[in-house]
Image 1 (tube, rainbow, N blue to C red):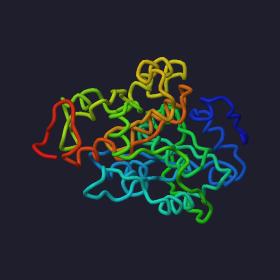
Image 2 (image 1 turned 90 degrees about the horizontal axis):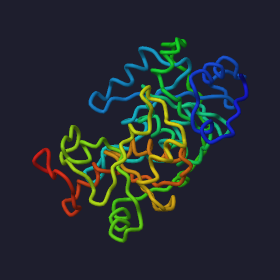
Image 3 (image 1 turned 180 degrees about the vertical axis):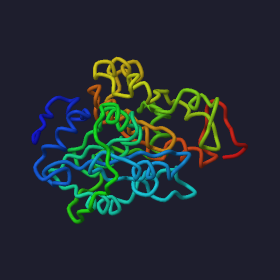
Length: 304
């Protein structure tokens, strides 16, 4: 099918594997066409950083490019940053141009399943002003479960098309988060799992716990048992008690390093609450300064 109707809020944010298979088969010019689709594989393992690229090389959705979380979707970390700082806009322009993304391109991002990594690419494209981007609902696992074809062929780059600029999605830094919590003018949603939020475990960062005043909203609660997104009305009911009557500009999402926080921003859009801000540095940046308070079990690794 060469045209996909994306009028309602869910279809403007998500694509099913069946829709993608039809679009790849029927889109004029194929998936690399500027007027058609670009598919991007975002699989990544925080504890095994090379595993995502290896998985892509072993088999991916036909025509899919690969975006590495560390190399492509983040800047190099510094002593004062979190683990995945926002990439330089020029770096993103180069990357997206290599993928052949133009202003009319529909980008479909996927990861292994639930979108926790692909949502980072979704957010970055939106931040750079590209609105035509969706997540593949259920990700690569759903594609394989549907018996759809997998390829090991590498797509050819198509440089020189992307011209977006940052600033189209709201961002809050650590000082703004601290000030907003102190004045009760923001609601900070932490998307990490409950055991990490409470400081019971901390597998990645040297300090366990959470930002005092943050509310836990584990990103897994945005998904069904098969790692597809919950319906919008279900998400609306989930977030209603967490955000109360806060306006979109007063909601800030965080996680460990600003990656799955994007999943929360995406889910809030599905719930009819667009406009939440990202705290890119998140927990891994917050704990860099000994002057910032920590709630929960304060130290899992003996130091900050």
